[in-house]
Every structure is written in C-alpha cells, then in structure tokens.
Length: 158
Image 1 (tube, rainbow, N blue to C red):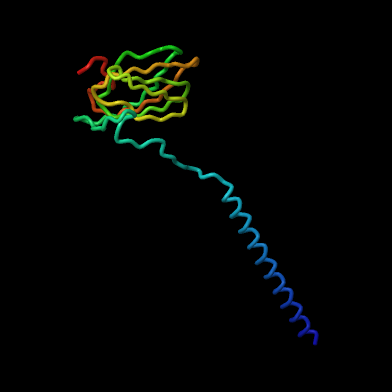
Image 2: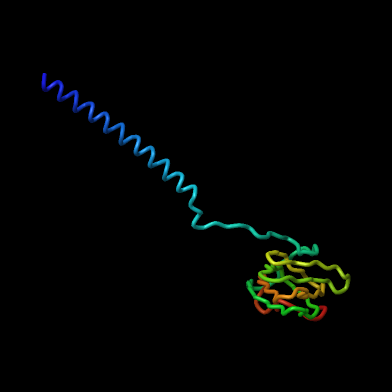
C-alpha cells in the first residue's frame, strides 16, 4: 500500500508541478509579449516627401551626366533674402529652424514654409528668392539630385 500511495503522491506532485510550470510559462509569455509591444522599433522610417514636381508645379527631370547628390545646410539670418536663382535639378528642402518665404520673381507666386516643412524645390528657369521673414535664424537642409559639374543654383536666367 505504501508503494501505491507513494506513487499516487508522486504522480499528483508531478502533475501539480507540470501545471504550475505551464502557468508560469504562459504568464511569462504574456509579460514578454506586453513588453515587446511597449518597446519601440530599433529602426523605423517615415517618408517625409515624395514628389515628381516642385512646390509650384514644375515637372522634374534629371540632368544628363554622371549623377551626383549634394546635401547642403543653408542658414538665413533674420531678414536675409537670397538673390534670384534657379535650379537645373530636382531637390528637396527641410526647414529645420525658422521660416522662409519663397517667391517666383516673374509671377509673384509665393509660399511660406515654417519649421518642420519639407518641400520639393523649384526647377529650371523660374528665378525665385527665399527670404527669412522671421525673427530667428532659419536653418534649411537641402538635397539636390544633380550631376557632376552642374551647379546647384544659377543666379541668372539661362
């Protein structure tokens, strides 16, 4: 009898232990799943802009030649205004600080861009200016998709 009772006790204890381990594992998996939901992705991405034309509607076309990407930071002091200029390549600008008023010289078409704005730059022979109309320095990060030997800006009508 002692052997049967001992076996029954052992089997009960084993069943109890197995059930307890199962519950602990289920609880641990739930906690790990909840923690995974709370953890941000280690790498994430967000499209800021995709454009086939400029902020004023110019259709982009890539220049001929060996491709060259140019990235610039441009600082505009309060009240500073660029000379009239144009670009022969697609580009994009991120207003990191401040604000800019961009205006097409010939037509007077203008648009104000504030901190955080991402814009497709103008294209081809439309001379335009950009002016810091704010009271703080405007910081602009500009990307140009150009070609070797091609300046990013022209200051006269071509």
